[in-house]
Image (tube, one colour):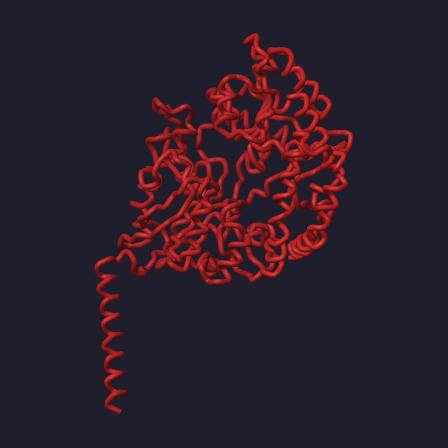
Length: 532
């Protein structure tokens, strides 16, 4: 009995010591303690707190030095310790953080390519990612309003277990329908060759690319022109696949039926066309080996005729005004597709904001991000505080004017990337035209090109769905080899390393990879989505 009493006393002393130590720790570092949250207005919390945030960095500036984040910390009383590995390394770093358990309080701007839907489901089920729907209902009125008014958005971010583990980037702007940066023609070359009408069929594109190759449109007397360029076809592929009636390089839905596009006859026609371009050196021979920086260097030397990028001046090195002479690619038809089609972005980017179990203040965190889903908040996130990119022309009337870009920056976009995290990554926000913002000629150019060349032809290839854990496991098992094989074979077919006479063998290999089961998984997921 005496031993038992001694053991109980020792246990009580240890627990008391631990509790005291925890209390002391919170007194010494109050930023780690849970705090009361103001449900409206600023500041969000009355006493300053500090949280950790992990996001992909674009390398233009340290996040702690960005005026937008500095100002927002003052407004909210919420400070951050930022971990921002380069975008190219982000997925690896994020996976390591999850594996170690030492994951940041908030995962920001990851996007669905880094924080995949499967990861949302998996880490949500494990309790590593917190469900957000109750937090949204109580502390995030802007997000709640969006979900109530847009049922498609809500079902696109709600997993099969009924929870929301990550917030979306919702876009209503002029580029919201873009699946990625478009293709652009070199306007100087078009002028030099007297081209008045852009190609509207694959045959017309082929003839123009031949002229780019042989008629010295850059006028330097050298045969150094590259008619069409890309890096591993990742940016050009979506626009050219559409000419052959394909919206997606993988799973796509056609009239309610799901198919795997890379094994269709339409895809074979795409490969045949691209192989012809490669063989005649109309497609850059270095397409499958060069970096984006090498592509841009060729553009700045006026060596390329048709190229992908978000905006043309990103590749050409011109000013925004000069780059308005570079028209956007017009969607094509072909012998196998009489109707032009291109992929449309659903305007919803998943995986942009998650709260982890390590976060001591999830209520404050959801309030912090909710502001960016308002018009005022998005304007602040996108353009930063007054005095950098803009100033008030008439504050009462809500009119702004743009300020000159400081010396040393090629464009306002390069400068903006040093002011705010809303550059080069998908940020949790409701984007769209900024009220009172002065619209530039370039803004008008982008809107006009989009309305003419994207909006009439764009269709969503496949909705944003979530798989069940069992479906996801089956799909992952199949995808590992399937995607690697198809990607490898695309390069081989285009470059001629693998002759297209081996097409049937290629299709048979895909069939042996359980493609029927793979397609059925996505058919079932589509049917659930359509019926919800």
